[in-house]
Image (tube, rainbow, N blue to C red; front, side):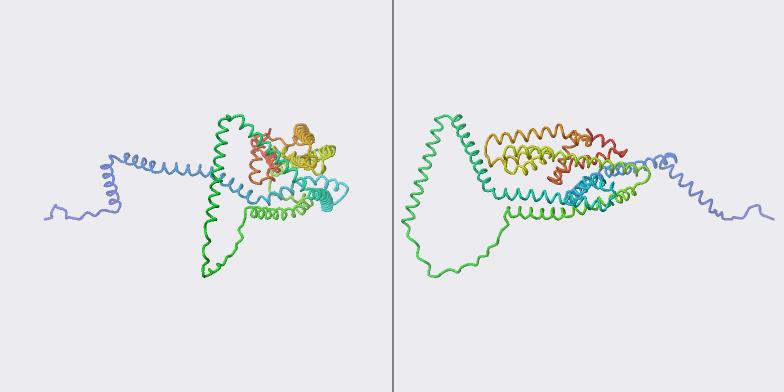
Length: 445
């Protein structure tokens, strides 16, 4: 008889059933810990947000610091390069400015069918000859002045002594006026008593020296120690050595100026074409306009100052010759060109003629020299300078002052002379570049 019971068979789970079972177990565990699956996902996203939010803020702060620090570092590097390479940059800028001055003469020779190389050579040679003739004239004046230096030195010493005597007289008069007579008498008695006490002390000391006997000589002569003399460096010697080393560097770099000027003039067209090849499309047109604006501005500034200096030097020489000053030509030339130095031109222009006026040493001569130099300086800066130079160079006074401070700090006296043309060249570039026009308006008047 067949049995109705089924035989026992062990139940084996497949791989899919096992995965579904483990997923169900994990869901139950998650529901037990967090309440539900939605609750767990919400908590997980909140945790991720909390972790990643500070990281994104830090990265943003790092990017902002990088935007600020990179321009500062670049500006510091540029200032350091300009400061330590000032001899090289000053030489190059001076050569460029001389080339701008001589370019119209080269163009004039090219109109009569001179090749550019030959025209540049002729112009540079004539410029060197003119400088040589002027140098001979200055040398003759300086040699005569060197022979009369003792006379001028004695006049300066007498003048200093006179000023010191007048100052002492003024101090004595002030002392007598402000201090009462009784107090002055007490001070004089105290000074007299102190002098008498010092005299008695010196007399007693001399008496003691006379009464003392000389000590007996020692039986053995001590050995003479070896003495080596080492020459120490004095501040004056260090200053002279530093000045000579700087003069050597200046002289070395100045010897390159004629060659730089010649090659800048003879290779002008090639340099312009090669420079414009760095730009494409509209940028090339902007670069050409900027280069032309810089050239016109620098030429107008340098040529205008040179012509104005010549006019002032000629008028000053005539006035000093009329006043019978010695070395009138040298004093007039120095006074005329030094008058164009910004801010300190007036005292610098007065120094050479006042030094020459030491020879006649008359008060009316000093007064007339000061009045003449001051009038020429005021007329030149207020009437002639705006007409000759100011029509091309439009800079506001604040920018001019800051530029003089900056370039004077970096390059000393040459920086004061080159500050205005370099700042005006920068303004010419900013005026022709669309993104830099706000800076050009800021620099302008």
